[in-house]
Every structure is written in C-alpha cells, then in structure tokens.
Length: 327
Image (cartoon, rainbow, N blue to C red; front, side, top):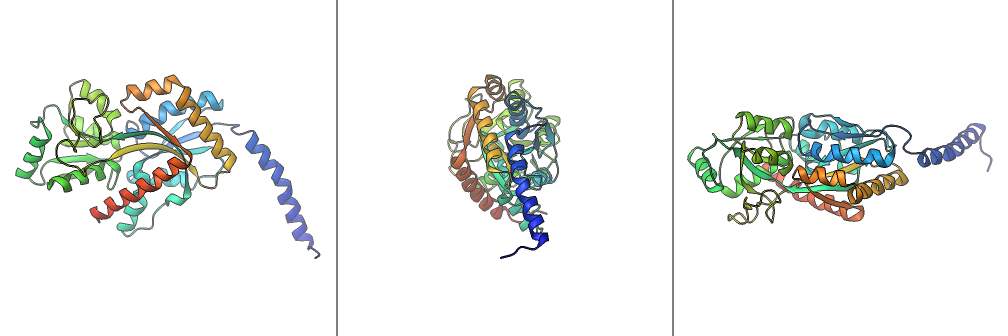
C-alpha cells in the first residue's frame, strides 16, 4: 500500500512526537504544579490541601501553590480541573461532594459541568465524620435539646452549608430526615464561609468537618452536639455519635482526595501516587499539621481508592436523589 505524501508527513510528525512526549514525562515536573481547591480558604479541602502541597514541594522540587476556585458549591473549580490539560500540572484536592454535584445538576435540569469519568482518583488523604456544631451561646446542650427545639419551632432553626447538595447539606438532610425535623437551609460558597456565618450568629448550626471546627470548640466559641461517624472522633471524645443517640442510619464522612484529568499519562499519574504515598508515610510536618487540625491521615490509593470513590459516589447520589430538586 502506498501512502500519500500528506499521510507520510503526518505519520513522520507523529513519530517524532513520541520521544518528545517520553522526554517530557521523564523530566516531569519541570515547573510549578498547582493544586486546585474548589472552595474558599478555610474549609475542609483547604485543611488537607495546604500541608499536602507543602510536603509535595519537597518531593517534586517545584512550587505547588494551592489555588482556590470557589463557585457553585464546588462545581466551578472541579470542572476547571476536569477540563485542564492532562499533563500532570493541575490537580484537584476534592471533597466527597465531587461525585454528588453532577447528579445534583441533572436533578436541577442542567447539563453537568463535569462527570466523574473525566477525573482519575489518585489518593485519599483524610476521611472524617462531620460534627454537628452550634454556637456556645445557644440554648441547646445536647442533640435531644436541639431536636426538641426544632420540633417546637419548625423551619426557624437555620443551618449553613457549603452550597446546595454539598457534603454539609447532604449530612444535615440525613439528620432532618431521620429525626423528622424541619430546619432552614442557608447555602454559602464553601465550608469556610459557612463556619464564619455560624461564628457570627448568622446561622444556628452547621455540619462541619472536625478540622475547621475543633479550634473553635476548644476556644469555647462552639459546642459540638453529635458526630456522624461509627465511632467518636479524636479530639471530640465527649461528643456522642448519632448511632449512640438512636439514629442508626445517620452516618456520613467528609473525605479529601487528589484527582487528575483522566487523560493524564499513566506514568505521571503514578508519579503523583508515589509522591503522595511517600509524603503521607514519611512527612512528619504533614502528619502533625493534619493531626493538629483534627483531621488525621486516612491514606488510601490505587484500586482501593478507586473502589471507595465509586461506592461512596453511589451512596451519596442516592441521598441527593432523596433530597430532590432544591430551588
């Protein structure tokens, strides 16, 4: 078979790119690598991203700036990474809401800005149960007090979240359904602003990651009433679980994990995985930072993390479908 001159030129050009691409992968990273957080500073994703990025700088030998791209409850930043060049220079530190948001867009009659098959799971960093916190000045000393007040004044006790269908919204929806109470949902642009609103008295309650809430509980500004885990959380040893308090189906975790655009070459994905495994196992500064923030390491990678993401996304998608359309 005789190739046309145009096809010969195209074929030779493609062949010439193969060693160039291989060299580019061998030399990776040759410049700064950014880690996107799809929420404002101060939330759970930030708690995981900043010490992880600092540790990666010591392994990569390049700057790893954390870039906050909030908007639409995490959709904008997540979509920006899903559409980013698949060269390993843009990663996402995501929360468990990552798999919820495409389904919430469909429920609202919109085309999702991204889908999960556009992102490759690399490694999980943390996995924390959420904690129900209220201002220390609030009259509720226990979950029973909170539930009783909500039943007496339906729709008047407010709670903040990181946006409609965010992890913090889904966690509270589980509670309101199980306890048969009606609370006023007030969405914000991220967990950080929602926590600020709670501290300022703008809202009355919040399902928070333990890391952001812990300093304020220790300072006496917030009171923790219950947690969504199977076991009590380190740092919150005196805070009962919902299961202990008679709500066996109220269980929820905020996990953080690193994702890359799915078309990122396998060798670069593996470089990321090895680097994350190394810093999580060896970098004591990272370990101490997460422990101090009340969000200890819960590292997982490879097939185990991919299975975890798939199963958790399916569970949370069902929860969002139960919530239904939110205007």
